Length: 303
Ligand SMILES: [Zn+2]
Image (cartoon, rainbow, N blue to C red; front, side, top):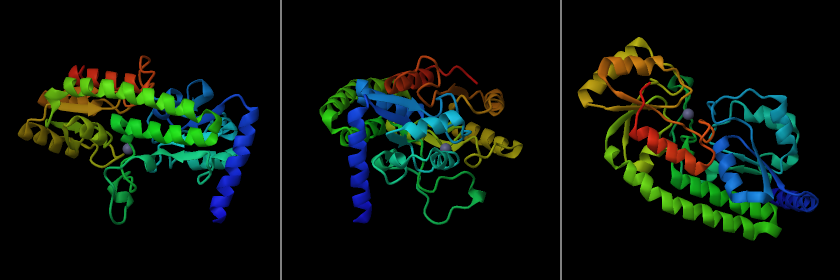
């Protein structure tokens, strides 16, 4: 009850402060979330991402410019599921902005809007590598989750800025319509991959595989966040040969030596997939991201 009271007071203060501001100041942990928030918020919001899509979102160095962004934010949108655990908490503390602390109306953990894959039952130890116990946080790579994220963002924007709730819902509808138009085309383009075994570098493409019906049977990393060894690579070569695995997919920010080696030894094709909006200069929207992923999956350029 007390918590609810605090939240409603926070909401009242925020709504009051918004009456004097031009737009809702939205800060996101990643560029994917920023792209969705900008699509849903339109001219009513000002969106800034804390990290660029060219980088591994598991890591970020807290810079004064990032603290400044968080300190001024009305709404902080995060991936959650421990994706930002290594860098966001100290940033939130340094920013001293009560509006966007966890539990406040100005903080939205988008992992609560989707069903996470890969939840770990039982205790998680360091020996298991960089395992996310709450579930795999790479969920934005399923376009159906992008729509769920957009719905949660539109609802929250409408709560914080009730005067423009209709605008947010209208833009959400347009986002959903674009998705409805694009998804069947992406699925059709990836039909040749259906049920095919694929190797991923990191455990980050499970949602993409789930959305488009291919199977990720192994990773180059022997454990999440742990670099491959000579022994783990040679075991992988055996597996690629025995199971006839034809495709390896990886993010642009991982080392390429292992992929080159596996390609040389087995002939496996390598698709370097943009994992986020902003990973390539031509990926500006959430829809651009899947256009680029589909293109890269169909024309693996090699390591
Ligand atoms: Zn990860």
